[in-house]
Image 1 (cartoon, each protein chain N blue to C red):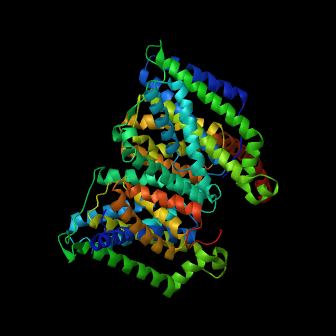
Image 2 (cartoon, one colour; image 1 turned 180 degrees about the horizontal axis):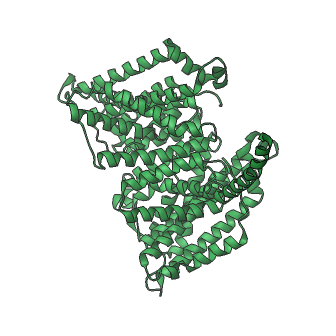
Image 3 (cartoon, chains in turn cyan, yellow; image 1 turned 60 degrees about the horizontal axis):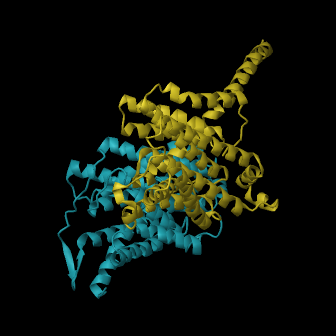
Amino acid sequence: MAIDVSTLLQILFWGLYAGCIYILLATGVNLIFGVMKTVNFAHGELLMIGAYVTWTLFSLTGLNPYLLLVATVPVLLLFGIAVQRLAFRPVLGSHKLNEIFLSIGLIYLFQNGAAMIWGGDYQSLRSPFESIAFDIGSFRLPLDYVIIIAVTVAILVGLQLLLRRTRLGLALRATSQNRKAAMLSGINVERMDMLAFGLGAALAGAAGTLWAVSGQVFDPYMGSVPAVKAFAIVILGGLGSIPGAIIGGLFYGVAESAATFTLGGAWKDAISFVVLIVVLVIRPTGLFGERGE
Amino acid sequence: MPVAFDRVRPTVVWIALAVALLVPALASGSLYLLTTASIALVFMIYSEAWNFLAASGQGSLGHAAFFGLGAYASALTASRFGLPPALTILFGGLFAAGIGLLIGLTCVRLKEWFLAMVTFGFAIIIQTLMVSQFAGISGGWDGTAAPALVPSSVPFAPYVQYYLVLAVLIVVLLVFRRLLRGRVGLAFAAIRENEVEARASGIDPVRYRLFAFGLSACVAGIAGALEIHQFGYVTPEVFGTDISFWPIIYSISGGLGTLAGPLVGTVAVTVLWEGLRGVGLTYARFVIVGLLLILTVIFLPSGLVSLPRRFQAWRRQVEKGEADVPVSDAEIG
């Protein structure tokens, strides 16, 4: 197969754009893990709920779906806080397997709850900019890709500012570094758990909006595949590391895109598992993982 | 995780066995009831397999991978080479065990998160592969035919089938019981409670975890093969997340880490499930089961089998409480 510049650009941008959605998802998983030391296996379902919330708001208001991020993200933030408070808080610290099993219950609840509310059929949303694209040589760069990449960068910068420049962020980081010491210095660690889970859910919600806006279809059961990819990225970047999630996500997005172009579309989803196994065999703590827990 | 290998009273075991033997008579000619009971037995085998792995401290979120691989391996060898399903079922188990060991090798050394993430991913990915890369062999979404477990020419075939599955379940239970009450069970408990101390006393956690993974995958594969040879066909839906989650739900609701737990859980949840179906609920059934799972993990972490013990403790407390009341009253007076 002849690979020219425009094909390379296409692989690169497609990878960046797909990577953005996974990065948001994986960052949320890592944020939650960092603070609560729990992996939320129902994270893909939060993306699905985010997509549906945006879709509902769009049907009600008819506003530009990108603007609806401003509404979807807070909805998911509150939703995440409620889930943490009602489901995870009661079993936190009892046994790791309990927290894993609890997420399984949540997956059932979210998938089928969504099917009851929104129906079990495929839905999709159309971006108002879908016909606009920039021509770079023979490569067409859709405006949506540019917006999605820009929105993701803005969200990640915002998150970084929150974590690095505010007292709240300091408290979150302290809790994730050493829970007991954080407690002793007067931080309400249980509130930090709720906040971390809420932020994780909000990031997944943003990912859901972008998923829907980019024209990908969604149904109540679509969350598992993006979740598996987010886990692959989390393992690639290192469990609990946010820079790891970003770099892992970019790498993963481009790898997936390259695999789709060279090996065919059937490999698009399978590549995540190959990445997962290869990383686990070669470097189980990931590129940026904390050494041992 | 509270794990206790409770000794169930022999009378209870005999009553359970008698009920299991009498089910075909109780079904009184209803093929639907008999099939439901027969499938419930298959899921008991499957849940026991998952529960055995959990007893070694490993929670798999993708056991459907092994269930499905066993099913496909058995169906394909039986239909391609014309071998009797009774033989190919064993091959299905061995095939699942082989793949299980490979998956296990990559994550037995790691924390429980990794195993959960890898198994969760593996089941979903293998479903994707079955309908794309391997569609030529597997038949894609349409699936492939599987010869009947007991040919319909045999008189009373559905009954023979039921007792065959029951026999496999009893063998599986006896094997797991022997293992869990012996050295292996003690080693599992030691690894679960404190891996460093287990290592200090000469137990190799990696070896025991791998053993648990291989045997669990093997039994799950046999269960998968038993199921599809009853249905007559197998589709990639055997790799679905709900097939992965059923053994978790059955084991947790019954009692994690106990031999009786998955049996009790399968019966209780199947009755509830069929009851909700009778009421005409579809999505709501899953919502209710999901909620019940969450509530069980929070409020009844040792499952239904712990209820009698809880009840006894509660009664003792009430008796003591009643005895205490006059005393404290007297003190106040």
